[in-house]
Image 1 (cartoon, rainbow, N blue to C red):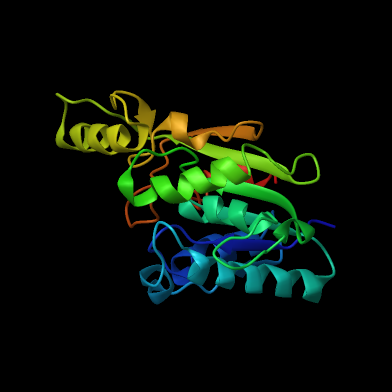
Image 2: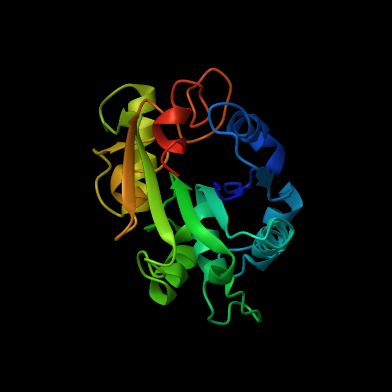
Length: 228
C-alpha cells in the first residue's frame, strides 16, 4: 500500500496554499492519503536563519501523528525551504535544544524546488547547518531522497525584466553569475541534492501563484507524483 503523504510548505507560505496539490493527490490516479503540516505565517515570523524550530516543531508534530495514526512511515513532500527543514527533522543531532530523529517516521523525502545550496544571507546559515550535519542523501538507502527540478527561465543580465530578475535571484543563491537555468527563484545547480534521485521538469515556476504552472498542474503532476 502506498505510504501516507505529508506536505511541508515553503518559506513564508502557509498550509492552505497546498490544498490544490493535496486534493489532486487524493484523487485518481494517485489515491493517496494526504496531510498538510499546519504551518501558519506566524511560525515563519518566529523563526530565523539560525533557529527554525517554530516551523520544524510543527513539521515534527504532523509527521509523527500521521505515522502513528496510519501505522506506516511517511512520504514527505517538502516545497522549497520545506525540503531543507525536513532534512533537519530527519536527523539526530541537537538543533536549537531539540533532537528530532525524524528518520524513524519517514520513508521518502521529495524536495520540490528546494535550494540545498545557498550563498544568500537569508538562507545560507540554515542551508550550511543542514549540509554540515546531514550532507546529501544522508539516510539513504533507508530513506529515499528525490529532487524535483524545474527549468522555467534562464537568467540573463541583459535580457527581459523576468530574465534579469531571475539572474539576480540565481546569482544571490549561487554566489556566482546567474546565467543558468532555474525555476524563476532557485537556480538548477542548487536544487539537486547529492545522492538523490532527480526528476527534471520544464516550465514549472517556483511558487504556487495564479496563472503560472506549478507542480500541482494537472498535466505536470503525473510526471513526478506517479514516481513517489
